[in-house]
Length: 301
Image: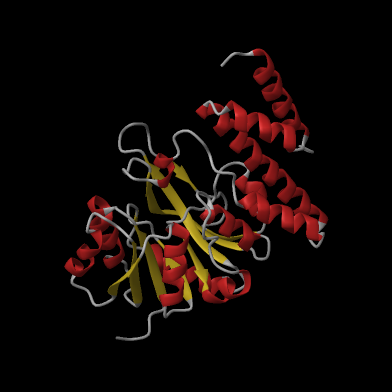
Protein backbone atom coordinates (compact mmCIF):
# COMPACT_ATOMS: atom_id res chain seq x y z
CA UNK A 1 0.00 0.00 0.00
CA UNK A 2 1.27 3.54 -0.77
CA UNK A 3 2.13 5.88 2.09
CA UNK A 4 -1.14 7.52 3.22
CA UNK A 5 -1.51 11.25 2.71
CA UNK A 6 -3.85 11.47 5.67
CA UNK A 7 -4.65 9.29 8.68
CA UNK A 8 -8.20 9.07 10.00
CA UNK A 9 -8.63 8.37 13.72
CA UNK A 10 -11.98 6.98 14.93
CA UNK A 11 -12.31 6.66 18.73
CA UNK A 12 -14.79 3.91 19.55
CA UNK A 13 -16.65 3.14 22.74
CA UNK A 14 -19.94 1.22 22.55
CA UNK A 15 -21.12 2.72 19.26
CA UNK A 16 -21.77 -0.52 17.37
CA UNK A 17 -25.13 0.58 15.86
CA UNK A 18 -23.47 3.51 14.09
CA UNK A 19 -19.96 2.33 13.30
CA UNK A 20 -20.55 0.86 9.82
CA UNK A 21 -22.24 4.08 8.72
CA UNK A 22 -19.18 5.99 9.91
CA UNK A 23 -16.68 3.64 8.24
CA UNK A 24 -18.61 3.55 4.97
CA UNK A 25 -18.49 7.34 4.83
CA UNK A 26 -14.70 7.10 5.10
CA UNK A 27 -14.47 4.34 2.50
CA UNK A 28 -16.49 6.44 0.03
CA UNK A 29 -14.08 9.37 0.12
CA UNK A 30 -13.15 10.82 -3.26
CA UNK A 31 -9.43 10.61 -2.42
CA UNK A 32 -8.09 7.13 -1.75
CA UNK A 33 -4.66 7.59 -0.14
CA UNK A 34 -5.74 7.42 3.49
CA UNK A 35 -5.57 5.01 6.38
CA UNK A 36 -8.33 4.64 8.95
CA UNK A 37 -7.46 3.66 12.53
CA UNK A 38 -10.33 2.62 14.77
CA UNK A 39 -9.27 2.75 18.43
CA UNK A 40 -11.58 0.52 20.47
CA UNK A 41 -11.40 2.02 23.95
CA UNK A 42 -12.64 -0.98 25.92
CA UNK A 43 -16.04 -1.36 24.25
CA UNK A 44 -18.37 -4.03 25.65
CA UNK A 45 -20.73 -4.24 22.64
CA UNK A 46 -18.34 -5.94 20.20
CA UNK A 47 -18.36 -2.97 17.84
CA UNK A 48 -14.66 -3.34 17.02
CA UNK A 49 -15.34 -6.60 15.19
CA UNK A 50 -17.22 -4.66 12.51
CA UNK A 51 -14.00 -3.10 11.20
CA UNK A 52 -13.11 -6.29 9.36
CA UNK A 53 -16.53 -6.26 7.64
CA UNK A 54 -15.54 -3.19 5.66
CA UNK A 55 -13.19 -5.47 3.70
CA UNK A 56 -10.60 -2.75 3.09
CA UNK A 57 -6.93 -3.05 4.00
CA UNK A 58 -6.76 0.69 4.64
CA UNK A 59 -8.83 0.12 7.81
CA UNK A 60 -7.31 -1.35 10.96
CA UNK A 61 -8.39 -1.88 14.55
CA UNK A 62 -6.41 -0.99 17.67
CA UNK A 63 -7.75 -2.23 21.00
CA UNK A 64 -6.96 -0.81 24.42
CA UNK A 65 -8.43 -0.87 27.93
CA UNK A 66 -10.95 1.86 28.60
CA UNK A 67 -9.14 5.15 29.25
CA UNK A 68 -11.51 7.70 27.78
CA UNK A 69 -12.04 9.45 24.46
CA UNK A 70 -9.00 11.73 24.76
CA UNK A 71 -6.73 8.74 25.36
CA UNK A 72 -8.26 6.93 22.38
CA UNK A 73 -7.55 9.91 20.12
CA UNK A 74 -4.00 10.14 21.45
CA UNK A 75 -3.47 6.43 20.75
CA UNK A 76 -4.70 6.97 17.22
CA UNK A 77 -2.28 9.86 16.75
CA UNK A 78 0.60 7.67 17.94
CA UNK A 79 -0.42 4.90 15.52
CA UNK A 80 -0.79 7.23 12.51
CA UNK A 81 1.60 7.04 9.57
CA UNK A 82 0.58 10.23 7.75
CA UNK A 83 1.66 13.78 8.53
CA UNK A 84 -1.95 14.95 8.67
CA UNK A 85 -4.54 13.44 11.00
CA UNK A 86 -8.32 13.76 10.66
CA UNK A 87 -10.82 12.80 13.34
CA UNK A 88 -14.28 11.28 13.01
CA UNK A 89 -16.42 10.12 15.92
CA UNK A 90 -17.84 6.62 15.51
CA UNK A 91 -21.45 7.85 15.29
CA UNK A 92 -20.80 10.64 12.78
CA UNK A 93 -20.14 10.70 9.04
CA UNK A 94 -18.52 12.64 6.18
CA UNK A 95 -19.52 13.78 2.74
CA UNK A 96 -17.35 12.02 0.09
CA UNK A 97 -15.44 15.26 -0.56
CA UNK A 98 -14.33 15.82 3.04
CA UNK A 99 -10.76 14.47 2.91
CA UNK A 100 -10.14 15.96 -0.53
CA UNK A 101 -11.19 19.32 0.88
CA UNK A 102 -8.89 18.96 3.89
CA UNK A 103 -5.89 18.16 1.68
CA UNK A 104 -6.67 21.15 -0.54
CA UNK A 105 -6.71 23.40 2.54
CA UNK A 106 -3.41 21.95 3.74
CA UNK A 107 -1.82 22.65 0.35
CA UNK A 108 -3.21 26.19 0.14
CA UNK A 109 -2.62 27.21 3.78
CA UNK A 110 0.48 25.39 5.08
CA UNK A 111 0.79 27.93 7.91
CA UNK A 112 -2.49 26.78 9.50
CA UNK A 113 -2.53 24.57 12.58
CA UNK A 114 -5.98 23.12 12.00
CA UNK A 115 -8.06 22.42 8.87
CA UNK A 116 -11.84 22.27 9.07
CA UNK A 117 -15.06 22.33 7.06
CA UNK A 118 -18.60 23.39 7.81
CA UNK A 119 -20.75 20.79 9.52
CA UNK A 120 -24.36 19.85 10.12
CA UNK A 121 -25.86 19.02 13.51
CA UNK A 122 -28.43 16.31 12.85
CA UNK A 123 -31.12 15.84 15.51
CA UNK A 124 -32.80 12.81 13.98
CA UNK A 125 -36.10 14.55 13.34
CA UNK A 126 -36.57 15.67 16.94
CA UNK A 127 -35.82 19.24 15.82
CA UNK A 128 -34.58 20.83 12.58
CA UNK A 129 -30.97 20.17 11.61
CA UNK A 130 -28.57 23.10 12.06
CA UNK A 131 -25.62 23.97 9.87
CA UNK A 132 -22.49 25.74 11.12
CA UNK A 133 -19.95 27.38 8.83
CA UNK A 134 -18.20 30.69 8.14
CA UNK A 135 -19.30 33.35 5.67
CA UNK A 136 -17.20 34.82 2.90
CA UNK A 137 -14.81 32.99 0.59
CA UNK A 138 -15.38 29.24 0.15
CA UNK A 139 -11.84 28.61 1.46
CA UNK A 140 -10.27 31.05 3.90
CA UNK A 141 -7.88 31.53 6.79
CA UNK A 142 -9.61 32.25 10.12
CA UNK A 143 -7.41 34.38 12.38
CA UNK A 144 -10.09 35.37 14.93
CA UNK A 145 -11.15 31.91 16.13
CA UNK A 146 -11.99 33.05 19.67
CA UNK A 147 -14.27 35.86 18.48
CA UNK A 148 -16.07 33.44 16.15
CA UNK A 149 -16.32 30.76 18.85
CA UNK A 150 -18.22 33.16 21.12
CA UNK A 151 -21.07 32.84 18.62
CA UNK A 152 -20.92 29.02 18.79
CA UNK A 153 -18.46 26.20 18.18
CA UNK A 154 -16.78 26.76 14.82
CA UNK A 155 -15.44 23.19 14.61
CA UNK A 156 -16.27 19.78 16.04
CA UNK A 157 -14.27 16.63 16.63
CA UNK A 158 -15.72 15.21 13.39
CA UNK A 159 -14.92 18.09 11.05
CA UNK A 160 -11.19 18.73 11.58
CA UNK A 161 -7.68 17.58 10.75
CA UNK A 162 -4.41 18.55 12.46
CA UNK A 163 -0.77 18.14 11.34
CA UNK A 164 1.41 15.77 13.34
CA UNK A 165 3.88 18.63 13.83
CA UNK A 166 1.26 20.64 15.72
CA UNK A 167 0.65 17.81 18.18
CA UNK A 168 4.42 17.51 18.62
CA UNK A 169 4.52 21.16 19.64
CA UNK A 170 1.46 21.56 21.85
CA UNK A 171 0.86 17.99 23.06
CA UNK A 172 -2.12 15.68 22.77
CA UNK A 173 -5.68 15.74 24.01
CA UNK A 174 -5.92 16.20 27.80
CA UNK A 175 -6.45 12.72 29.20
CA UNK A 176 -8.55 12.54 32.33
CA UNK A 177 -10.79 15.42 31.27
CA UNK A 178 -14.38 14.20 31.69
CA UNK A 179 -15.74 16.51 29.03
CA UNK A 180 -14.50 19.11 26.55
CA UNK A 181 -11.06 17.70 25.73
CA UNK A 182 -11.65 18.47 22.04
CA UNK A 183 -12.66 22.10 22.71
CA UNK A 184 -9.49 22.49 24.77
CA UNK A 185 -7.39 21.15 21.89
CA UNK A 186 -8.89 23.51 19.30
CA UNK A 187 -8.33 26.48 21.63
CA UNK A 188 -4.70 25.52 22.31
CA UNK A 189 -4.11 25.30 18.57
CA UNK A 190 -5.86 28.63 17.91
CA UNK A 191 -3.64 30.34 20.47
CA UNK A 192 -0.64 29.62 18.20
CA UNK A 193 -1.98 29.14 14.67
CA UNK A 194 -4.63 30.40 12.25
CA UNK A 195 -7.31 27.93 11.14
CA UNK A 196 -7.96 27.05 7.49
CA UNK A 197 -11.66 26.62 6.73
CA UNK A 198 -13.72 25.29 3.83
CA UNK A 199 -17.22 26.63 4.35
CA UNK A 200 -18.98 23.76 2.57
CA UNK A 201 -21.04 21.47 4.83
CA UNK A 202 -19.01 18.26 4.55
CA UNK A 203 -19.46 16.61 7.97
CA UNK A 204 -22.53 15.44 9.88
CA UNK A 205 -22.59 15.47 13.66
CA UNK A 206 -25.36 13.13 14.86
CA UNK A 207 -26.78 14.65 18.05
CA UNK A 208 -29.47 11.97 18.45
CA UNK A 209 -27.06 9.02 18.68
CA UNK A 210 -27.40 7.02 21.90
CA UNK A 211 -24.30 6.98 24.09
CA UNK A 212 -23.00 10.48 23.37
CA UNK A 213 -20.70 11.64 26.16
CA UNK A 214 -23.16 14.51 26.64
CA UNK A 215 -25.80 11.99 27.69
CA UNK A 216 -23.77 10.84 30.70
CA UNK A 217 -23.96 14.24 32.42
CA UNK A 218 -27.15 13.98 34.44
CA UNK A 219 -26.62 15.59 37.84
CA UNK A 220 -23.41 17.57 37.52
CA UNK A 221 -21.26 19.26 34.93
CA UNK A 222 -17.45 18.93 34.79
CA UNK A 223 -15.45 22.15 34.99
CA UNK A 224 -14.36 23.01 31.42
CA UNK A 225 -10.71 22.02 30.98
CA UNK A 226 -10.27 24.71 28.32
CA UNK A 227 -10.51 27.39 31.03
CA UNK A 228 -7.19 26.22 32.50
CA UNK A 229 -5.47 26.51 29.11
CA UNK A 230 -6.91 29.97 28.45
CA UNK A 231 -5.87 31.26 31.88
CA UNK A 232 -2.34 29.98 31.38
CA UNK A 233 -2.15 31.77 28.02
CA UNK A 234 -3.38 35.04 29.54
CA UNK A 235 -1.05 34.76 32.53
CA UNK A 236 1.95 34.37 30.23
CA UNK A 237 1.24 37.88 28.83
CA UNK A 238 2.63 36.99 25.42
CA UNK A 239 -0.52 37.50 23.33
CA UNK A 240 -1.02 40.62 21.20
CA UNK A 241 -3.52 43.01 22.88
CA UNK A 242 -6.30 42.34 20.37
CA UNK A 243 -5.98 38.57 20.71
CA UNK A 244 -5.75 38.83 24.49
CA UNK A 245 -9.10 40.63 24.50
CA UNK A 246 -10.64 37.92 22.28
CA UNK A 247 -9.30 35.16 24.52
CA UNK A 248 -10.61 36.91 27.66
CA UNK A 249 -14.06 37.27 26.13
CA UNK A 250 -14.09 33.61 25.02
CA UNK A 251 -12.97 32.50 28.50
CA UNK A 252 -15.88 34.32 30.09
CA UNK A 253 -18.25 33.05 27.40
CA UNK A 254 -17.30 29.44 28.24
CA UNK A 255 -17.49 30.16 31.97
CA UNK A 256 -20.97 31.66 31.72
CA UNK A 257 -22.10 28.77 29.51
CA UNK A 258 -20.86 26.44 32.27
CA UNK A 259 -22.75 28.44 34.92
CA UNK A 260 -25.97 28.29 32.89
CA UNK A 261 -25.46 24.56 32.42
CA UNK A 262 -25.29 24.14 36.20
CA UNK A 263 -28.45 26.20 36.49
CA UNK A 264 -30.20 23.96 33.98
CA UNK A 265 -29.21 20.89 35.96
CA UNK A 266 -30.36 22.44 39.23
CA UNK A 267 -26.90 22.11 40.77
CA UNK A 268 -27.26 25.17 42.98
CA UNK A 269 -24.36 24.31 45.29
CA UNK A 270 -21.79 24.12 42.50
CA UNK A 271 -23.23 27.17 40.76
CA UNK A 272 -23.05 29.17 43.99
CA UNK A 273 -19.41 28.13 44.48
CA UNK A 274 -18.52 29.09 40.90
CA UNK A 275 -20.11 32.53 41.19
CA UNK A 276 -18.38 33.11 44.51
CA UNK A 277 -14.96 32.18 43.11
CA UNK A 278 -14.99 33.53 39.55
CA UNK A 279 -14.57 37.16 38.51
CA UNK A 280 -15.95 38.56 35.26
CA UNK A 281 -14.35 41.52 33.47
CA UNK A 282 -16.67 41.73 30.45
CA UNK A 283 -19.71 43.88 31.32
CA UNK A 284 -22.23 41.52 29.70
CA UNK A 285 -21.08 38.50 31.68
CA UNK A 286 -20.65 40.54 34.85
CA UNK A 287 -24.35 41.50 34.60
CA UNK A 288 -25.41 37.93 33.92
CA UNK A 289 -23.41 36.68 36.91
CA UNK A 290 -25.07 39.30 39.11
CA UNK A 291 -28.51 38.15 37.97
CA UNK A 292 -27.62 34.55 38.75
CA UNK A 293 -26.46 35.52 42.24
CA UNK A 294 -29.74 37.35 42.88
CA UNK A 295 -31.74 34.40 41.58
CA UNK A 296 -29.90 31.98 43.87
CA UNK A 297 -30.59 34.25 46.83
CA UNK A 298 -34.31 34.88 46.35
CA UNK A 299 -35.70 31.91 44.39
CA UNK A 300 -36.35 28.57 46.13
CA UNK A 301 -35.63 26.52 42.96
